[in-house]
Length: 110
Image 1 (cartoon, helix red, strand yellow):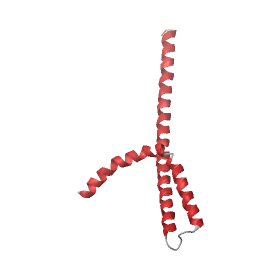
Image 2 (tube, helix red, strand yellow; image 1 turned 120 degrees about the horizontal axis):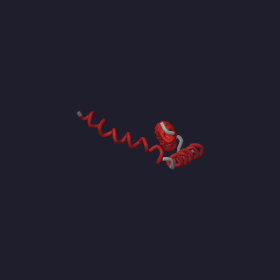
Image 3 (cartoon, helix red, strand yellow; image 1 turned 180 degrees about the horizontal axis):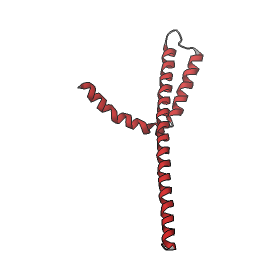
Image 4 (cartoon, one colour; image 1 turned 180 degrees about the vertical axis):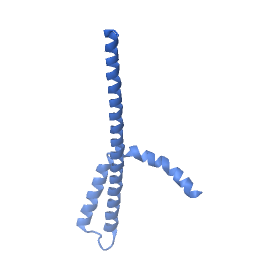
C-alpha cells in the first residue's frame, strides 16, 4: 500500500469514528431534552392545579377577602405565567400525548 492509501484509510477511520460519536451524542442530547420537556410539562400542570386550588379556597365564603390567601393566589398565578414562557419546551412532548389521545378515546368507545 502506498502512503496516500494509508493516509486515506486513516482519515476514513477517524471520520467514521467521529460521525458515530457525534450521532451517539446527538441521540443522548435529544433523549435528555425530551425527558426535561416531560418534567417541565408535569411541573406546569402541578402549578396550574395548585393555582386553581388556592383560587377555589380563596373563593370560599369562609376565606373570602383573606389577604394572605389573596397574595398566595397572585403569587401562584405569577409563577404559572412564568412557567408558561417555557411552553416551547414542554410542548415537544405534549404533541406526542395529543397524538395518542384520539386512539385511546376510540379504544374506550369500542
